[in-house]
Image (tube, rainbow, N blue to C red):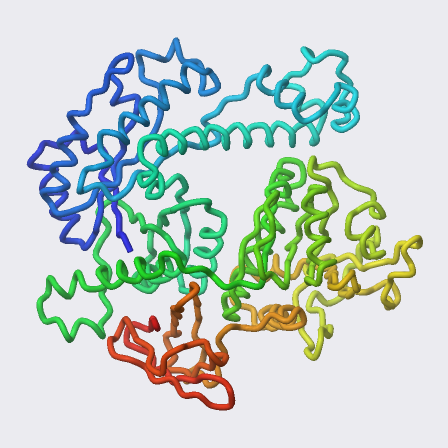
Amino acid sequence: MFRITTFRDYREYSPAARGRVLARIRDASFHAVRFRLDRAVTESAFHRYDDSFADSFFEDIAAAGLKAVPVLSFHTPPWARDSEPSFNDPGTWRNVRLFLEHVVTRYRNRPELAFFQVIFKPSAIPDSDPAFREYLMRRYPSLKELNRSLNTCYSALEDISLKDCAVFGIRMAMERRLFRRRAYERKLADLKETIRAVSPHTLSGTVFLSRRVACSDCLSALAQFQETADRCAGPYLIHWNPSPGTPVQEVELCACASGACGMVFPDVCGTSVPFSETAHAHPDPDAVRRLPSVFLEKCRRLCTGFSNPAEVGLLHSRRTGRLSEVRKQNENIHKRSLRAWCRALTAASLPFHIVEEDAELPQNLKLMILPAVAALDDADAERLLSFAWEGGTLFCEGGCGHYNGLGACLDPEHRFLAEATGVMECPECVTPGNFRIKYGFGAGTFLLSAGEVFTPWLPVPKFSETLVPLDGKRDLLCRVPYGKGKIILCAPSFGAYCREKRNTGFEGFVRNVCSSAGVHPPVRILKPAGSAAPLLKVLENAERRMVFVFFSSAASGCELEFPAGFWKKQLVGDMLRGGTVRIVRRDRVQRMKLKASPGKAAVLYE
C-alpha cells in the first residue's frame, strides 16, 4: 500500500530546503510524494512548456529514494484567458489534450514515477446554450415531444436557454444536470484516450478518481472502501486525515483489501505505529519502521486481480440525489440508508456490490436492495423487474420509484412497483405512538426505529389477483411472488436511522433479509472469544482466496467455518504473523481456530 503525502508549493523552496523536506518525508515511512503539475504554470506560451522545475523535482525525489505522483490539472494559462473561453471550445480542448500528451510522454518512463493523477471535475465545464440545444435534440425526436416530456412550451429550437431551468421546474433542471454529467464523461473519455495513445500501460496506472473518506474504525473503513471500489471505474486513492487514536495500520489494511492504489495523508503526516507482533523479530529500528509498509505493499500486489464474491447488490441513485435542490429529504434519506446497509452488511460479513444507475447488474446476484430510491428511470425499473422475474429477490426499502428519471412525480398507481406487484403506498401517512416498531420477519422479531412517519401498503384494485393478504391497511412489510422470484416491500426507511452507530436490531434484520433470499456469509464465525465477533473480508480469483480478519479490541480469537472445498490445502499461510494455520475437515466443512494478534488483524492466504 502506497502511503503518499503532498508537497505543496515545491517551487518556492530552494534545492537544499526541498532535500531536507523530502528526507523528513522518507523518515516518516512514506512511499511517495504528491505534487501538482498545472498547465497554467507549465505552458509559458502557445505550445511551449517550461519543464525545468518538474525535472529538478523528479531528480530530488529520486535522490531521496521516494516515488513521484504528479497531479495534472488544466487551469488556463494567463496568456490564453482571452482566446480560450471554456473547455467546450474545440481549440481550448485541443490545447488541454496536447498538454496532457506532453507531460505523459516526458515522464512516463521515469523510474521514480509511481503513477499519474488527473484532476478534472464536472464543475470545470461551463454550460452553453448551443451545446444544451444540441443535447436535447439528440434525446427528443421533435420539439413537440420535448415540450410534452419536459412540460415546456417552446415554439422554436432557438428559444431554448439554460436560464429557463429555473422557470420550467425540476424536469428541465434534471435535463441540465444530465447534460453537464454527460459532457463531463465525454471529456474524461477524451483524456483517457489521449493517455492511451501515448501508452496503454500508463493509462492502466493512472488515477482519475480520488475519494475523501472519514472513518474512525475498521467497520466504517471496510464499508466506505467497498463503496468507493464499486463506484470507481479505475484506480483510486483514499484521501484520509486520521483522527487521534485511529488504528492507522488496520485502516491501511482495509484499503488494501478494497483495491485502493494508495492512501494520501496530509502534508508530512506523522509516522503510524507498526504492528507490535512484527517488531520483536526485527531489532533494527529502521527495519521495524519500514516492515509494515512492505507487508501492506505485498498484500496490495497479491490482491491485484482478486474480486469480491458478492451475491447482494445495493443501488446507488444519482437521480435521487439530483432531486435535492427541490426535495432535500429524498437525497438525505437515500444516502443515509445506503451507508447504513453498507455498514450492516459489512458487520454481518456479507459481501456486496454497489450498482450504479444505467449499468447492467453484476453476475451471480441473488438479492438486489433499493434503499429509498425515490427517482428511478424506466430502463432501470425494467432491468430490476427482469432480475426479480428470472428468480432474484428485489427488496424495496421506503418509497421507491415515486419519480421518473426526469424527476416528475408519478401517480401512486402508475409507479413501477404498484404496476408490477399490485401493491401501492397509502396516500395517508401513519404516525406510530411508539417509534420503536416490533414486527416479525421470517423466524425473527425485531425492534427498529421507523422515524416519525411511515406509509402502509394498499392494494391496487385492477391488480387484486396478484396480492398477498394485507392486514387492516397497516402493513409495514409484504412479500409478493413475481415470476420465478419475489419482491419484498418495506414501508419505513429503517436504514436512514441506523447509520451513525452499530444497531444490532437492524443488523439482525439485514441478515434475515439476506437469508430469505438464499444469501449466506461465505465464512461463519462459530465461537468468537471475547465480546464482539471479528470483521471478515474475502477476496478470490479462479485459483485461490485471501481472507482478511479484523478483531475487536476486546477479542482474543475466534473459530471460523468454511464450506467444503473453500481451502484446497490443509495448511494456510498467515501473512501478518508468519507461519501457517491448520485446517480441520469435519462434517463436510472446514474449520480453523485463529488467535488475535497484538495488531488485531490477520491475513490468510493460500
